[in-house]
Length: 288
Image (cartoon, rainbow, N blue to C red; front, top):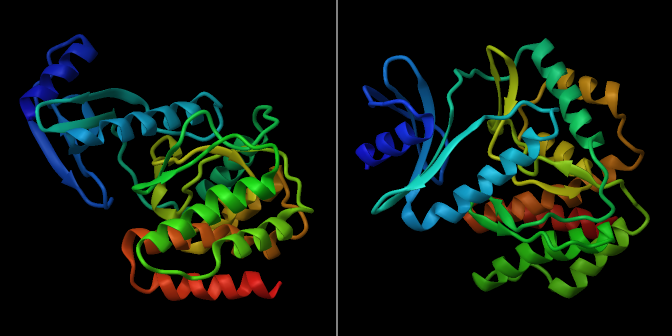
């Protein structure tokens, strides 16, 4: 496998790349990650089974979508390839540390706000389905935000749970509740990172960077809500965001609806205590 990686990378770079160093990196539940180097150039590589190649391609497309906005800083795609048993995604390598510096947190908040203001789109969705973690995320275009989120986010995850034998609520009834609660909220479609938790943002020598996106055009509040779900973002991040693109009234009431999607996804992926968290959020949504 490593020989095939070196050969394909050499062809892409148009110079001979021999792997002299490879370091296994921590983090990530889906693919193995390494830093590889020839002694001068360093690259970040994700490796999975050969049949995972379409998911790497989707990830690369999502990175490109963010990169094309010239707002948030994202990794540079180097190569996507496969060999007999494996597929891999190669990106430029940058040393990272936690985004805990106040200035960098503020700057990332500003850049995220700029992303959410970028571009013009009349509908909600994306040109392709993608993945949130290892779960397929449908993105069929829809003119109505309330319908898009109720059906393609909450309803989709509830259906996946039902297929595992867990019926949390009547799916049709609950998606109707979500539609009704979002019906009066008509956000401008924003290009979202889509999976914006603390583990997908870091600081580099060149400033804050984000990665592992699950992009679609949706309500910008979805990105902000997820930053509050698992914690880790400083108040400077939110001050930076508000300085560019202040949040609308009602965000706090919509936040549990938006975060229910990610909690349901975590339950479908990992099980455990996420079931109780999902049940608690469902009760909050029903009580509105």
